[in-house]
Amino acid sequence: MKDYDEKKLKSVTKEGLEMDQTDDEKKRIEEEKAKFEPLCKLMKDILGDKVEKVVLGQRVETSPCVLVTSEYGWSANMERIMKA
Image 1 (cartoon, rainbow, N blue to C red):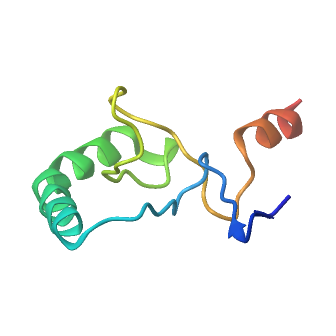
Image 2: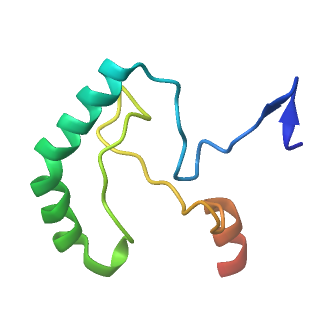
């Protein structure tokens, strides 16, 4: 199922999930991204080839991080199946 009630459905496990935001929220998010860019760079250096990139996101509120797959890549479940 790709859409429901004339709305396009998106997987929350993939990158590129966009939420409706006001201009003030967008500005605040951009400021936070700039503030945490050194930390993201450090995390990428530490993790190396284990991750494609490290970015700040607004997807979760109660967890320090979330792993997502690329927009056109395999889901985590499909990758597990292919490894088996």
